[in-house]
Length: 153
Image (cartoon, rainbow, N blue to C red; front, side, top):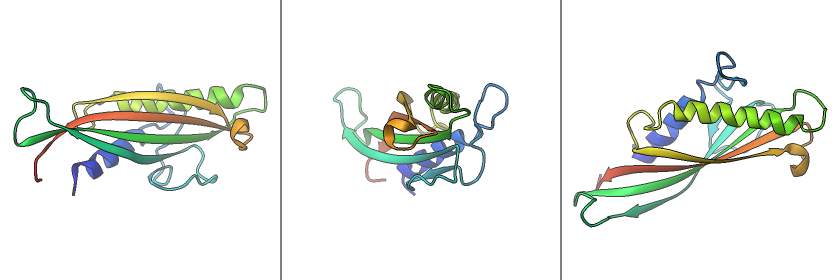
């Protein structure tokens, strides 16, 4: 099993700790609420969908050990939630709350279980009305994951 698969599974595991209690607003702890590589299914609300979005490899002289590669993987997470009311701005604010929950879960262990050096997150929230999904909110998070892998492994 490749390290990339392990990283994606750890992202899913950490997001599943979002359970609606404590500092979390949403509940993503159900077995079908956070999936890797599936299309958005409206019966999974809130729900998140994890997509790998490319890997780059580098060897930096004086820094990268000869038998290893420095890699950067980009991962996109699309998280959907139902608006808690029809008041203007609610869907966007609910998406921001879901975005915050996912960021908290991922930032609780930025090594993703000791598999990576760091995770950086860029995020945006949207009112579903803008995307022909009225009554829903969308958070899109792009993770930049830095890790090292053994050459030929």
